[in-house]
Image 1 (cartoon, one colour):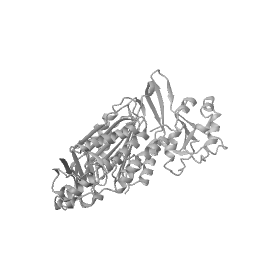
Image 2: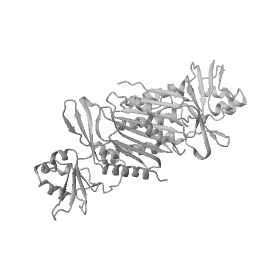
Image 3: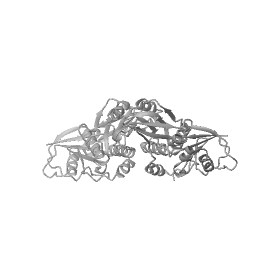
Image 4: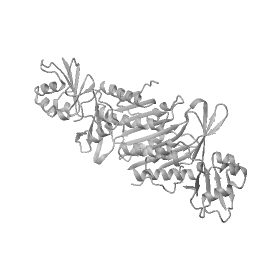
Length: 162
Length: 162
Length: 84
Length: 84
């Protein structure tokens, strides 16, 4: 069964409940829906994050990531939503949901998609602090490690995280 | 930080979006919300599941499971909802959501809770078939294996699954 | 006096969801109770025939069949759970 | 002619989000292009100073710095991504 992932890259907020309801509108073969929401955490005086992205490449990359998940797990639906722009503390950043007959596939695919988004999707976070200063967030090697555990062969997307 | 898990055992349906919104109503320390919805799958002529449970023990057991998760991972919130009664194909059965600063803790705790619910929560599923027959669902050893991978010490809840 | 509860297919076989019983002095463990209950009716005998596929709870906590009854108020017998 | 894009702190250092460039004949790889761009202004030199912390995409696909440019229409330079 070939599925058509739902991919949205937007500055607007999203309604996770409505997205889940759409996934649940089932063919009767879905027994498990795993989902993830990423939020802006208010660490020590952080006021907001501003997310820059690479229009054109972003949606392409999200679609490639979703297709990899669909090839690897028996999924009946995938939804990926990623916001850009200024997002205050508490705001939703990202939504990933995966539907499958069984829970293990849904959970694994959902984690895979998050790990892969963190290392492949062309977004950059800038922290806006309460004192008016700002700082680009640095990539974490723990995110590379998380993505590496899925053992995806280098896809020309190689370079490297040196 | 001690948290108070939200536990609901009910025949009524639930609104996953509203539950997630409640979890997102954040202290600013939540960066990750993982969630899971279990649905009735319409395998080959299945019309509905009827879920029997052990009133009194069910809520107690769900609370104990949630407390174990809260002790094991740094969670800012947990929601567990489990329905009972007659649930037609496509109906929601169970909802688990976990909030944490980081995604790994949220995902792991959510999977742990689902695995533990499958082997400890006193619910029994009866399949109702389109031809009018019915059959009690048998426990799967794969669910025991899934729960066992969390290496929870026997808690008097031992017996065993011989 | 102990309140005994049956769930799922055990309930259909015993013909009752719960009952008050007064087990005799020799009944010390949950397994002893199950064996004594088997003698109470053919339905009970059928429900509790194969203890390898039966789980139990004492006062709403999962226990092994070899746990002592102690001063249990409520004992439940059921098949392995299938929730979630 | 190649369209070159810069993101995040590379953009603030080069002072531009994108530009059309015509690299000379000796520029074969993405790394060659970065080295040639460094010579175009002090801002470019600063942005592309440490190629170990820079990632690239050719025509919107992640590539290694040693990939050939081929007939690329669009090359992007950026720090490691931090989405999700």
